[in-house]
Image (cartoon, rainbow, N blue to C red; front, top):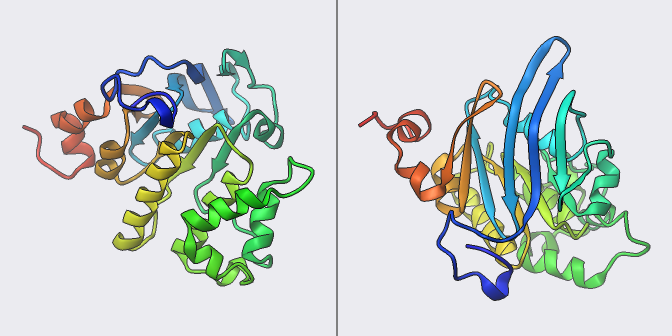
Length: 255
């Protein structure tokens, strides 16, 4: 898949020639004396879904947090359309078109669904009704519960709300951290279908996901992290068929 929704048929998956939107270049990130990212290099092209896989502690969430400005790298660069943004705080990066749905969802429990969504549009002078309608179309359940407090929603509904809130900021690139974590299989399937639809509507996606099979079946390309470094990268179909990936992340014996 490549490009916008008007030109998504060619080239083949994993071989996009669209412009690079987001690039992480030689990122080194530390938590105190511990080096969490050890020279990460990663690119995301316009219109792609890129999956980021790895075991717990491999650096996946740290990669997203660095890309969205929540963590400052000690070395390396974060580039958006070729311009450095690694010195910009996360709330300002939203204005540049990066939306981040962190692990844990982070909805405002004492605000209604509508108020949560309105918070996602804070960078604009007013809330665009068309954007609200889009979220309610993607997530009909949120429309049904728009006056309900965020803290009273189910886990799946809170995940929908977190994604919907990020969409209210009109992101060009959406960073999703473990969107299926803790959800029932039926809800997981719904979440993945909606992520695919969001991408088909023109939003580029960088996805951290424990469900490697689901992620790679939807993605164009993928990266596998091990202890803060990129161990493998390639087209999604290539990674899905790789015996090392299948043994480590799909619960299958190595061929």
